[in-house]
Amino acid sequence: MRKTICIVHFNTPKLAEACVRSIRKQGFEGRVVIFENSRSWVTREGEKIEAQPYPIAETTGKKAKKRMGVGDVEIIDNSKGQLVDFDAELAKYKKDKDQGYSKGCNFGSVKHMLSVEWLLQNMEEPFVLADSDILLKAPIDDMFDETVTAIGMTDGGMNVYGIARLLPFLCFINAPECRRLGIHYFDPDRAWALLSGKKLYGKHYDTGASFNEDLKQCPQAKVRHIDINARMVHMGSGSWLWKHKTDEWLAANAWLWQESPSRVALCAIARQENRYVCEWLDYYQSIGVAKVFLYDNYHGDEERLADVVQPYVESGFVELIDVGNRYRMQCRAYEECYAKHSREYGWIMFFDIDEFLRFEGKNIEEFMKRYKTGDALMVNWRTMTDTGLVHYDPRPVQERFTGIMPNDVCIKYPWPENLHIKCMVRGGLGAIKFGNNPHNPVSPTLHCIDAHGEPTPQKAFSKKIIHNTIWLDHYWTKTAEEWVNVKLSRGYHGDTHYTNMIKSQSDRNFFGVNERTPEKEQILSALIFSNPKTQKIMEHIAKTPQGNDQWRLEAETGWLLKSKLSGKTYKTIDTRDLKRWEVVEDPDFVKPEPKKAEESKPKTAKRTNRKGK
Image (cartoon, rainbow, N blue to C red; front, side):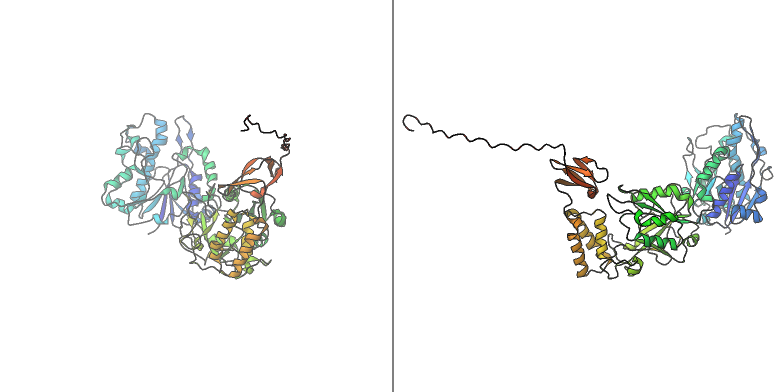
């Protein structure tokens, strides 16, 4: 079946051009036909609107390919009523008294119906009907199906009369089958604009409603319902009246129709990663990443990334953003970065410092050109083991750790750990949200694909593990020594609560990835229980766990809690960072004078009665 998209056009050349560009951008290589109706008209206020025809002279040949991107556009010219004489057709019916607006708007719907009816009766092949003011955001090849009569989305809430119609913004019409079954798109007996504006409840309709009614009344008709909102965005009915909004709408949705930037950027948030960050930056620079947005999430007096990444900042490769001493920042940093920079890059990757992207090729910008569709690319982990090492040494992590964890290993969940994904998001999507999950963005309209370009759910886990196209080598645990030191440096302090947590995580996570040996167990145990950070960090303080890693700290009488950052003092504070606080004496506290010993009184003889009793 030859794949054809038909666009009914009236005075919206900018929108129609963007529509065609979006169709080509989604990989559609079939036939695009425009039914051209543009003509001058007079508004209710008497203003003459000059015709704005689609640029017919530039729709074929080299100019068209330069203008449209891929392939030509065919024009069916009805601008002078050569095929459908609207004036003659509408003269057959009694018009609403409100000639100006009705002729421009309500009768505009009738003109649209008459145009689609012409296409239905004259097209040799089935076609997808599209409005000129839509932009595709997902492929629609699956909408071409000769086994059905129509495919689309029914809606009954477009106006106060609850008209049920097959939405004309994007729907499939099997024209040969409709002709065989006697199904029409236009029915004057149901058009309320042709019935003197009579409010015949349930009988009058807007474009697409008569077609839907005919489909329902034909037992042989087969209709497949789909959610067209997942495939397109729509400017709105009457867009030809809203010329002042056209540029604004097209600019807001430029990512759907304009050529996307090819550059690839990387966003990450780091804490206590100074030892590893330079190797990570060098690697991503070597594969062609254009820019790294690096958020430094240090806490308290921890070391800063600026101390080691300054050369990368000076060269322009890294933009360092200070978000120190702010909690639960990862997802917020991702969302902020995307909102600020998404229009500058074709893709933005959201990876950690222990994740190294591998792919077929040497340049990530060139590699990503193979993904013509999809809003977010989900990339699987390939978890690396400690390769039998137990202590840190200064060699690169990529050199030290070459062992690969088997794909059937389950650690935290009853499914394999390598089903985890991290994401790359196409630029220009507007705002995105990660919620509480840094693995992938969440949006009801986001079209996610896997490494093979197939649709995949918006989840932190994929349906299958793919390690042969593009994936992430995840250097999660490194050695036993590094595992515990990283945990301790990120705030897992040494009271019993945190010590037991690290030990529990080591048993489950570290030895879930790596082979358990007595030497590693001894190293882990020694580090956990002998590290200075596992000792009691403050005296004269009552610590009460509040949940979610938060503590209530209360100073004993005569003492105060002092912030190492601001220098301010408090009696009681809620915090997640115990290292931020120290204990100082309360200068206003007046110690009570010690009680003087009472002077001893001389003992007196016990009185007795006269009888000596």
